[in-house]
Image (cartoon, rainbow, N blue to C red; front, side, top):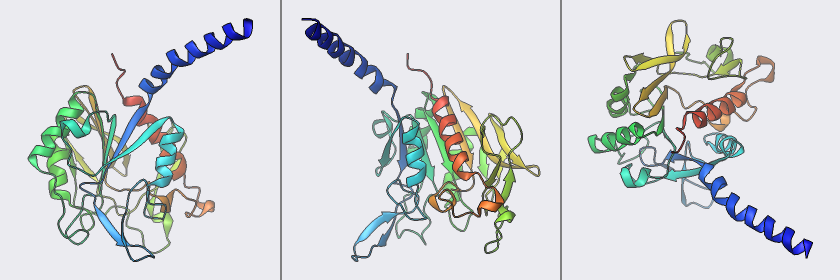
Length: 267
């Protein structure tokens, strides 16, 4: 009889606890609409690649995705346009390196209707991550139309240009007691589009007076921007020389935790 009672109590606990656990799961959605690149695989068929969760080569975000999952997040991707319906259920929305015509024959540009949907979603408590690239490799004009809604502008420059394997040219030292990078001390970014900020945006990370990462509070939500897709596998998988003490792997964990912490508590 005691075993039966114990089983019933355990069953009730599981049933009651499961919705709570599910409710606490945070969803991180990676854009596949504005970044929509394909290549032929070894079988000769086209496959999506470049800054995607599934891409396990140097060009992918599979390692960063694993970091999010380790921190309790659920990964999703959005192949369709961002609108109110498609963004429902997303806590963190990441837009990386919007396509130029040299990357995709018919790129999906960020238009006014997308901007309205995204800004409305942020205002309600969404966490938006904008990761650009230098102007030769990212479509900045339309991305800036979105970013400027939050006081952020991606400059047409090339900061921390790295020649060959001279990785130290891309080094940025993290200041002590940094609110974002709590464990990373030195990170690697290259060919950065620096930021020009106006209210409500403020710098989160600077280097030699240049803004590398910016943040804005907007309604109940938060926007963070950086001009480099820098957390892709090539620079989080140990390729960077160990002797140079780069902490991009730690930075990926720091940033993921910080983003999750920005999500407003559900009422």
